[in-house]
Image (cartoon, rainbow, N blue to C red; front, side):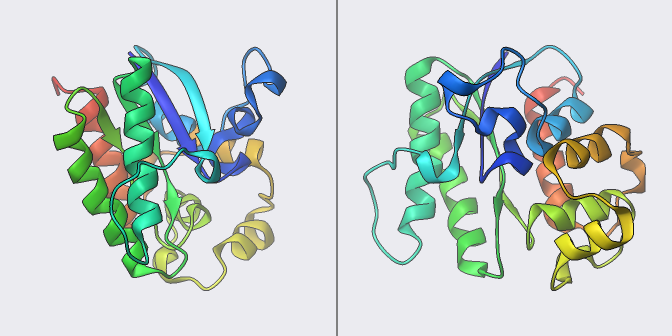
Length: 197
C-alpha cells in the first residue's frame, strides 16, 4: 500500500518536509510516519508527502474555515490523481475548535467525493507535542498551555528526530486515557491499515 503524508513541518513529516529535490533517498522519520509504523510496521510505504501550507486547495466551499476543508479535500484529490489509496495527516488544532470540526467534516466528505482514497487524519489537540506527552502517559496533555515547553523542559525532546524516536520507543499501551484526539487518530489508522483485525 502506498501513502501520501501531510503535516505542518519537520516534526510531523521528518525529512519528507523538504521539497522533493532536496529529500534524502530515505527521508528521516517524522511523528506521523512513526505513529503509522507503530500501528502497522510493514505492508505500506510513503509514496509522497506535502506540507500543509503547500497543499493545492480543492476549490469548493467558503467561510472562515473553508481553507481547512479545501486542504483536506485537496489532499484527497492529489492522492486520487496519483493513484495513492491512503492519505495520512495531522493538523494542530491550536485552540481553534472550528478548525477541528472543519477537518472532521472534510474527512467525511472526502469519502463521498474520493471513494478510492482512505483518509487517516485529524486535529491534534492542541498540538502534536501534546500527543507526544500523552504517549509518555501524561494526563491532561490536550489541555496544556505549552506542551512543547514541557516536552523540552521535562524530557529534553526538542527536535523532529527525537520526537519520532519517542514514538518508536514508547509503549503505546501507556497512552493517557484522556488523549482523545490521539486515540481517535490511532483508531482510524488501525481501521485503514489493518482492516482485517
